[in-house]
Image (cartoon, rainbow, N blue to C red):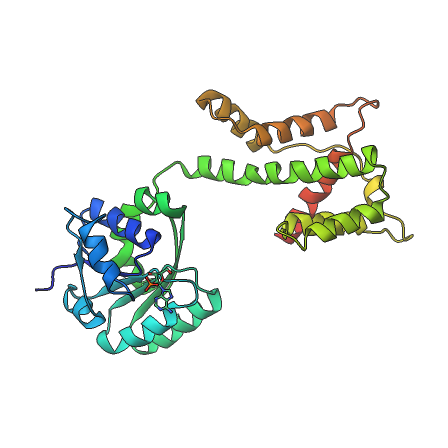
Length: 302
Ligand code: 2AM
């Protein structure tokens, strides 16, 4: 008898935890996986004693679902497409497929358009917060066919992270201060301790960017160091070595002190900014100029 509110395909830890999250919020979930034995393993262990049901085939999974049928795919990135092909013949107009598996966004746009033509509502949803978040409250970022939203809203809002949006944004934004600070420190050491020429610094950042430090901020740090003015001279030494902060860095550091949670790197980054803006000529704050330039380029680029 059809009893499940929603099905989830993909029983890696993220998928399992998302099922347990939905179960905790009183939704009956049908679990399915390419390797079928994982369904039984899950039902016998993590899902034991819950309302979660399992299926041995896609056909059985669909038969266990209430109508309209809602299915979440949480399979390895790029692999959802095979399942979607197999699912479509089993679905009806108004059914919903949600892909939560980090697909390439152009695939999502294409799926959304193709499935709409067949009457199926497709949603691509970012699921962030790792394994713990999946169970206790992920950050969900759904996009796709808007007609799906009124249906899936209750589940999405039920299982998603609850919190003060601006608090999250405050910390999230200021993590970038923490990212920038080591870049500033590194450039400071290169210039003032190692006595490297600016071109050598560019080379170092470009080399790092070919390693595990393949990061946007490292890339633009190299570009900033490289940038030349109209007279073919490096621009960076001409930028005033002073940078401010918008207040969110200070609030993040204050909150960290209040809650007793060490965020030493962000705190350090805020102090470095304060130092750089002190009107004391004897304080040489090369990192200030780099941070200021990073800030500027981030603003332009993002
Ligand atoms: P598996 O257990 O059968 O390997 C994370 O890897 C999840 O994505 C797992 O549930 C895995 O299923 C599934 N997965 C990986 N590649 C897949 C594919 N090509 N088709 C279907 N599911 C896949």
